[in-house]
Amino acid sequence: MTAATRTPRTSRPPAPSAEPALLSIGALARAAGIPVPTLRTWERRYGVPTPQRKPSGHRLYPASAVEHLRKVATLLERGHRASETLGATPRELDALLAIVDVPAAAHAPHPAHGAPTIDELIAHLHAFDRPAMTAALRAGWSRLGPMGFLRGIAAPLFTAMGERWNDGTLEVRHEHFGSACVGAFLREAREPFDRRARGRRVVATTLSGEAHEGGLLMAALVMAMRGRRVLDLGPSLPVAQIAGAAEDDAVEAVALSVSACVPRAKAGRAVKALRAALPRRVALWVGGAGAPDGVKGVERFEDLDAFDARLARRT
View 1: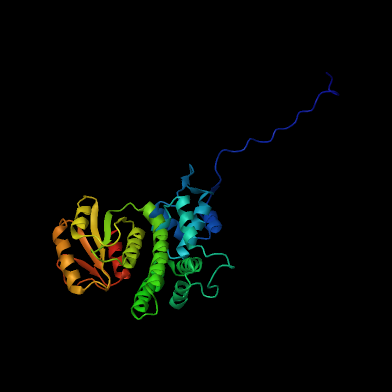
View 2: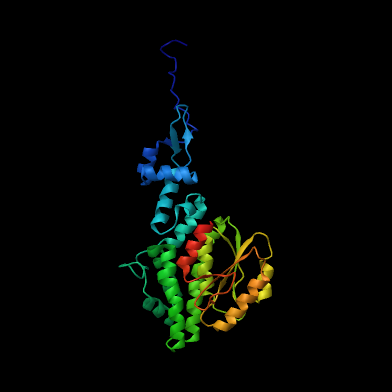
């Protein structure tokens, strides 16, 4: 074959690199929208973002960290903590974001201010409008964050339902419907925290005959947010059964919610009996409007903020 007829060689495209794209900390900060000092603090405290080191010692970060950090930043804006979100898996982050995401504008019930009022929520109860109720609760969670939601919506709503049932402006069916809606939302909100919880176990319940579990569900969410593994036994459990559930060495405490519906003297006797039945190593945490005062060996909490602060000191 002569030079004139020789087939010219075609150049091959370079093989794609198997190496992941790497970013400097400055580039990572710009892409994720998080300041460099914050990223350095997170890396030092929590090991996230995780760097790779060049032979020169410089840190480089995978481009895949950008999406993770953006999701974390969104959750921090909604009231979550860095310690709870940085180590979460992509699936866990997506689950948290699914809870806090506000519905589309066409379905958002409170576009002006984001968080619903108690009167608006009560109106949804009267109408038995579960979709509107759920959308309003999601909007409040997104606007206020977890503790703000508990403090500003869930707790006042449970109180308002009880008061309006007492004065006849809510009937039993409305109160039950509202409690079911809020209870379902609190369980949904707790699930991602439960999946990540690695702390000690806490038994959570109410005294025998106590059917109101609003306070129990709120306390369980706070405990899960603080990394506790919550053993939720539901409401109305006899003292002996509560004590039996706390025999496991992994149990740190029993958390008891006592509503104002329980007579104070009866609650006091039951709490004393429970304290006596529990192993000495197991703490007894009691909260709620009906929680008795001055029971030896019992920690009583005035509100969820005080409970959260106590759990933070034990974390």
